[in-house]
View 1 (cartoon, rainbow, N blue to C red):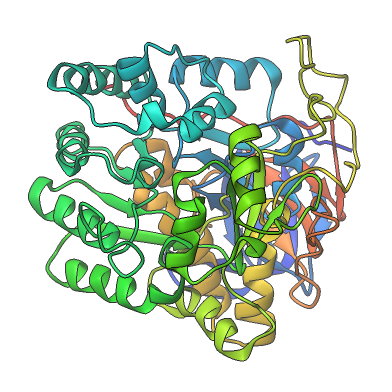
View 2: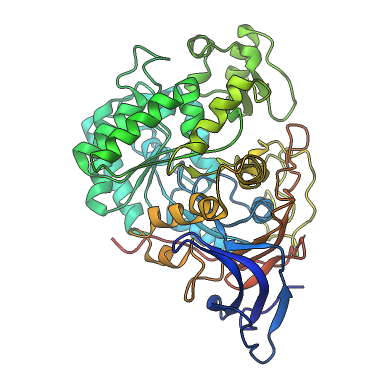
Length: 509
């Protein structure tokens, strides 16, 4: 089913959308050698070209997910059916970043991939002498450790900054800062890391600490910290999942970012269209006393694997002590409540908010992901297993974020045009990265010379299918998806043998 990269492909007669130029019209798209060779009406067919009739379908640049913790081939296959062609781990990062890139290349990935420098892992090495292993799981494993959350000494901070500088030199796409998991850490450390990023010319990707409304004792308001860092250092500053860290104060946080941007500050943000989050039950902000400040009870937490709804504070303390790294859902909005639904849609309606999934790693009951490397480090299974079981422990946003955003904002409400939809999901993410990674300038657009990372979708059926019971059910409506000119999805069917993903890396620094 997969086409060779060098074989020309013509997508004939689709509704072609380029968010950079604003073009939205019926045309053909010629793909050759991994790039878009031409766009026009009734293009002449090159010898040996594969012609795909895409009449009535929408053709756009493949979507770029800035915030994807699920970095296995199995997880990427779910993302492909959600319209994604590039899946990046930028909030948590991975360390050593060179090891993360080497592992992905050796195993093969359906989608393009990339990693930031992991502040959390650098902190664990500098403060706890805990060596990282180059995996996303390793980056996330330290978050429930109280010793990891303490302030760094001047010597430790110097070591941490040196580690991060080394990761940037090895091609990291920025610095991922999980500062919300160390909410009492010294704000001067955050500023020091932001200065390093500014000097290197890379963005920071931050899970912000608590807002003052939810934690009056916070060392600094989570939103204001980012605005001040951008103002004081000049670092390009990206706030991860504004919806879940802001919750019922999202309008205030968005207004703060707008004021900063109006003053010329390089501030960006992202959101996912779900009323619940997902994180480790041992996270500092899920302590029973912190939940109360949010206006939530322990029963708002549901364990992702077992489905257990946490009964009370005593049970929550047990889980945090015994299983601090276990994923749980955090229900902070009721999507069936009209007022909460408005809060859910607020960031998606807000100007320039990027769509990003915060896809969580899929737990297959302790075994390796189907079709990926074995748990003992063995080789990937031949061609990978597909379809995936539906019961992997993860959040439905892992499979459904982009299709759900299109369903809500284009199909059902008409709030976005298709040009705007691809701007939010493809162009803005590419523009955020192109100063760090010049290769990003060929992504997120649909024009001659752009990378042939393309999605062809049915505008009448695009939508999410994953639920809190069937969390890895693929989205619907993606008819074709090409990565580097090779089909990963053809006629709605995923090719598990297709592994055309390539690294997106920062330029040498």
